[in-house]
Length: 561
Image (tube, rainbow, N blue to C red; front, side):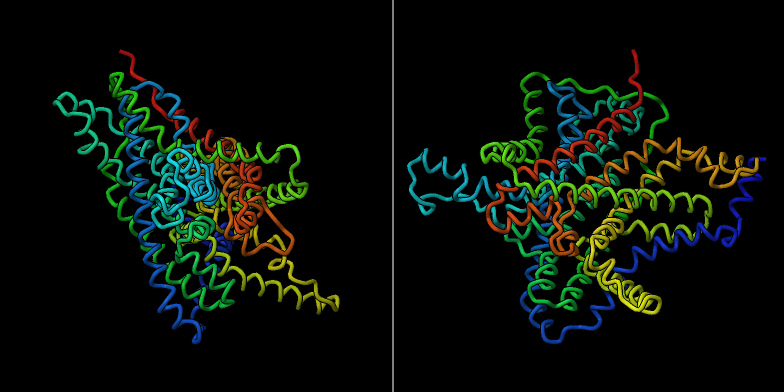
């Protein structure tokens, strides 16, 4: 009976689920609209500015972007894969603590890390001041010091801030690799180095490729750090062409070029996962026995694992806390900060609710329809994260204005007066940008959660006469509660940290914590925004802890000898 029900559901025609298909179509159109509009604006061209952009702006910006992406990817792979392999394969002092510390840099927005290091390592910062006092140097001409406001500085800062993306992906794959294969290799005399090179890394390659691509997409999305560190990237060129040169077509043309780069990144990530079928989860329960590391080498392993935590989390956090205390920000803080905190929480909460509802509704609809066209719509709905926020804001503005004009035309016809820019001129534009960009997190969690629930349960409930809404309420939602909370936490914190889209789409006199910090940074006194930066980081730690606990809970039970 179950098999018959499954076939019935599989071959059910599309028109039997009009609401589900309509929902999937709307969500896909929501994500696709900014991209289509972006290409439309770019086709209009800017004959006066384009020659200047093509000759003097795009070539250096493209070169900087490529070098920045390559450098960040290299650091992320070395630091992320190296630490993931060390904590998975070896037993050393402090390993349990390191497991909790390694993902913590994810709590920091990249631009805040860049502000901190530019402050610490600049000519007037404590590091160079201390060196001058120690060695008796009187000016910067008396010694050489690496310039943090450079491409090299940006690569190091972003690399260590983003390496947890690769660490989490690689560790998850190392944890679930074949126990039998590892033990067989060990019994044949394979050293830990050969285990890593010949077995663990090739099997983890798809996960590593996915983690690296995420880190590179985050790098492409950045505006605040690259602007502060003086690195002219394509994203920053879009930002300055739109705002400083007032050329929307010129900015759109650069954005289209960058989208081709994003498409290449996605293709590279897919290429890395092309042999995913070769990786497998060992059905045999158990963890592979970690190799004890002698004392001195054990402390070296601990130091190697603590290095990215120190650079990506500890140093920025301690500096922010010190600045907040020294400047009395905890006592006599800016009263307007309360209003900005409320605005930030309100926008993030609204966006989170919409994203969770839309994402899980789209996943439910796909599960109900089970047809290629529905899968295609669902795929498009998950592409928003690949759109850098600057590009997204650029492409979103015209559709929002068009909707506002339609509303005003209707209002004039009905009431004889306009209602103004309800979407493009309000915070709704920011929420809309958040929804499009972070919808993929919700759809990803929902799809993964639903994959664990057999479709036979749905079919059995439908045969028993339960309506699809009843199936969702009584079966799906209770089983998906952990995935719902996980997605909501990640989305909420990503919305708190988001800077470029908020900066470009916010109405006048509307500030969030991220734009509040950005304003201090552009005026050269970032330290005054330390308290706001700490608030973002402290909230961001919550989902990081959730991810660590979730990852450890997924571990199989250790084998008892």
